[in-house]
Length: 280
Image (cartoon, rainbow, N blue to C red):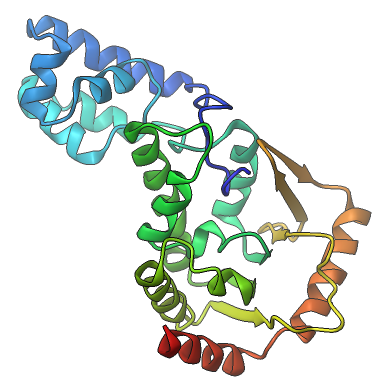
């Protein structure tokens, strides 16, 4: 199953953007001008030669620490610091997810219902890494790091866009599953309760027993753009579908609205989370 737009080995890494390839070529040219092999350069910037290769080939968004250390090693020309601001691609995001991610970054309203896993915007690091560890085919260390970097970067939306409204409906069984073990689940619940304190975030729990449920067709993601246009997104096994058809989006909005009335209230959801945390 795709994990919130993450890229597994089965789907390959996202295609490199022109800006990433250009940045990588500049790093390689400066490194070669300095007479350093990738391994030697990696030792000086304290990154593996594999990471250096990924940056130079445009497959990986450079870490800010990488850029600063590379500048020091390569003469402090300032070229890399200036160029990095023009890079355009989040690492670890699948091609099918990028269009949604671009819309998500500017959305004024974002609704998410999830019944398979805690959605990426709410995942603490330990929980996310467990999901990456469960990926098949298996991911290597570099892919895991790239995917966590992408996920952590996306999560900044919750705090960087205080005027955007975020609503989440989570199935209770997502927390009862104890993905990653008791310790990871404790951290997950603590993180969700912390995020729920943000004024622009509403988190509701859909109880395990619910005789009437409008979300049985599966996960729902909806967003509203600054131009008040609504889009939806569905993600499946190694694929994703951006939905702009207003009739389809309207149906999904109706289902989500019904679920908000069927899920526990904000206060009751928080109480349930606190009780579940205490029982671990």
